[in-house]
Every structure is written in structure tokens, then in C-alpha cells.
Length: 447
Ligand code: GLC
Image 1 (cartoon, rainbow, N blue to C red):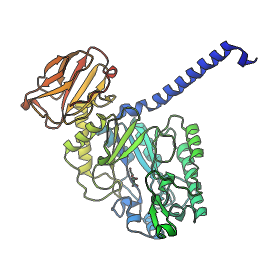
Image 2: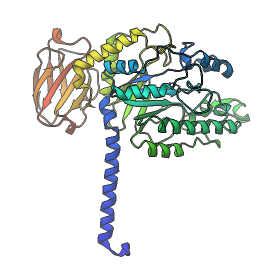
Image 3: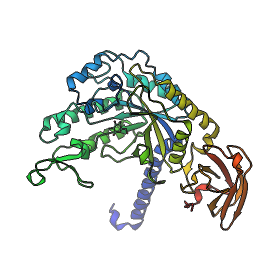
Image 4: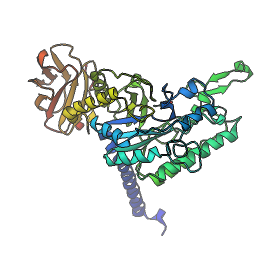
């Protein structure tokens, strides 16, 4: 049949194409739905670097020779490691997923990588920590994430991808092999959290400047890209990971199409964004990797952080760095349980919500779910809170945190009054019940 001369056939094809695009778009949305609803996860940085206890960058920061650092693997025998205890703690913190460092920049694999001698299976511990972790997190009903660093400081090719091309290619070979192992040997993986895989991160983002730049290393200016001949081969990995794990979510640190974006550190809290899914990662105390005696901040700090992230429509991935024996410091565990206690009471205003419609401002933030807007008042500038007008009727205003809210709504806006003594010291949460879905209201700046 000659399709070109059959207009109805062309229309049918066009309709099918639109349907297919719609289904593909919906599939993407569905893949990420559980993650968006989860809102809060646990990041765990744990590897050989827990032994010196000076953070996960210790080898680089102190320029410890590769062979010397590798000897730590003979001492690594964390007898108190208990993946179920980690997962149990994540649950009691109100977290819904975990992300564990399967291999960091030091190159030590926490899983079975066949004959590779530098793994937790082939050294003193003789254990596959990724396997134990995946099983425990899955059993606890948590989303299972793996952090993975394609870059490996043991390869001169990372620093000199062109001069040391064979080494860079060996690093790539390891990356592809390890990806295959991680994606095939542990069942379903929900999140793959890349770090250090961008081509622009090769040689730490610097280029040899040549004579005109004074024969020096020059930091590649923003917007300029690595122009050398080495290629990470991310496209092959991307195809493999979509084939092996069709529902997996990936962040954007390996030059691949990302499902969500990573913001790193509390300083990167940034702006409200309800289009591109995003996650802020941050540590509970100290470095990402273990440092002894790190005392977390008071509870209100983490509640405000979580609320500020969720009110900007993001997720929070809060990191702990267990010690060399595998245990998470008790003071940190205690703080996590307190966060979980708060979420046990006020989780309705966090889980399965989206940010807005009232944009973040001096007062705090807002979230919504169904017909309810949750106003998180972190600071009262005056005796009442004045919010801009919305095209919906507020049927009822009540404070989740206690007290009697007075509500006044007119064409100018929504006014909420709560006596000072009834406000919460951390976050006064006021639920506004509307006569229709809150998602239908567009975002509104709060002056
Ligand atoms: C960085 C660091 C790393 C840490 C990560 C967490 O890029 O290289 O040590 O694992 O951030 O976001």
C-alpha cells in the first residue's frame, strides 16, 4: 500500500505517533512517581576511607600512594556491619529509599567484580556489601539506590586522558564491566547515582594550556568542554542500563539523559523547580565519608532543611558515613530517629506532596496534596500571615501543629492568624482545605 496517497492512513499514523509519544511520556512520569512521592532518602558513604576516618577524599587530599592506600583493604573487616540495621534506621528516620556507595573514587569495589583483586570480596572482609545492602533495603520496603563513580584515582588516564590513553581506556573497560555486574547480579535496582562521570570532569576540569597560556594547567572556563579524544562510552552503558533495568532512575552526573538532577550541599538549596525532578544531597555531619566524633546539628536544622527542599518541590538525600566497623554513630542515629518522629506526626504535609502553590519566601514554604495546601510557616513576620489570592475557596484552615487558626479569605488574599503561644517553634503547619484540587492552582509568589 502506498501510504503517501492515502490521507486517512497518514492521519492514522499521526494519531498512532501522538499516542505513542503520550504513552512514552506517561511511562517516564510513572517511572519517577514513587521517587517523587518518597521525598526523603538516606545516602550512605562507606568504604576503605572509613578506616583513616578523614572523609572519602582522604587518599587524594593527602596524596597517599595507591599501593599504600590499597593496604587498607587487608585491615577492612567490619564485624559490626549489619545492613538490616542501616535499613531499619532509614525506616525509623521516615526515609523511603537508600543510596549506597558501591564504589567511590578510590576504586575499591564493595561488591563481587570477578577476578578484580581490589574488592571487598577478594580482600580481608570477604563479603559482598552491595549484595547484603540490596537485600536488606529491599526487605525493608525501601527504594534501592547505588552510587557509582566511573572515575577511579588509580588510573593515570583519569588525569591525562589523552597522554595516558591506554590507562583511560582500561578505566572505561572497568566502568562498563562493573556496571554490567551491578545491573545484572542484584535484582531490581531503583536508582543509579552517578558521580564523576562527566567528560568535563576528566583531569578535574583542567587543560594543559600550551605556550600561550604560560605552559600551565588552566581550569576550563564555564561552558568550555573537554575536547580530547577519550570517550567514556556512556551511550553503550545507557543502552545497557535501560535494557537491564527499564525502570531505573539516574541522576545526571555521567553525561546521560537524566531522570533527576542532583544539587549538592545545603548551599545549593536553590530555587523552586516543579518541572525537572531534583534532589538535594547533604551530610548529617562532617564529610560524606566517616569522621569520628561528628555531632549533628539540633533537630530543627534538619526539619527546616527537609521542609525547604520539599517546598521547592525537591527530594532530600541525607548522608551518613558509618565507621570502619560498619556502625552509624549513635548521636547521628538518634537525630535520624527524631526526624522520623517528626515525620510520624506531620508526614502528610511532606510525603506524596508537590511544592507550592505558594512559592518559598520569608514566611517559609508550601506543599500540596489532593484538595489540601500545607503552609509551612518557618517565620512569622507579624501577627498574621497574608497569602496572595487563589482561585479556590478555602473551606477550613487547621494547624497540624496545634492551636486554633483564624481564617479570612477575600479577593485580595488569604489571611491566617494564630496566637504567638500556639505557634510551633520549628514549623507551624497550617492545612488549608479547598473546594477543589490544589494542583490546579498555579504557583504564586508571596510578597
Ligand atoms: C562529590 C564528591 C564526593 C561525594 C559526592 C556526593 O562530587 O566527589 O566525594 O560522594 O560529591 O554528592
